[in-house]
Image 1: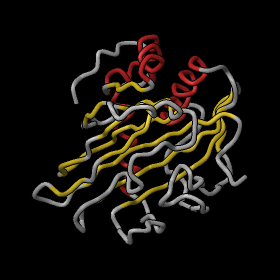
Image 2: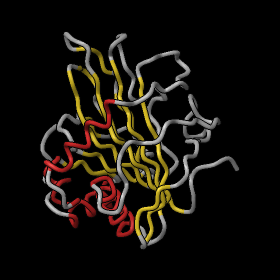
Image 3: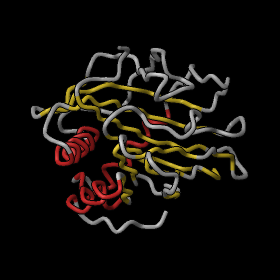
Length: 242
């Protein structure tokens, strides 16, 4: 990925407002979150214990994941009792329309923890971009694995998530080819392609304005994987059946 010329919070916000998405390198994330990379990288070990995703309709065993729900408001970061992940079919034609229960995230969301600092940074962006309000947040830890061949980061294809903001952090990328991300406006197919490759680089998106997908990965000589942290923020409540 070409290094992005994003140097501070104000610039991140202006790029997001202008294009509907922004890509930050790991150093920019570290500076804006207020944590050194030596504090972020130890979180990567929690991706070593992700259960298989049992809901893949293509029958694959290439995706592992955990999921947690939180509320971010002026008083802090609040972890919710475990609840299912739900998307309407209008946003996920492949896996929508059903309640998907996953094991909770292994990240520590205590007030003084690294994970909470990441969420508070995203909350700050969302508040500045829209207005200060409670944000209903879902945290997904993903591993796309190539042990059995091709792995699909977005088996549903190009999509929106039905939320307000999406953050996709690249955690690790080991012995794989592919995994190119494509982001384009909802009213055009003229977008930008890039490959996140640096641990803790991130793609930030205004979900109402852009559509995104990531191409399949395949092993590069040896078994490999691609780990990501996907965080969504939505105003007014979690996605649920009407």
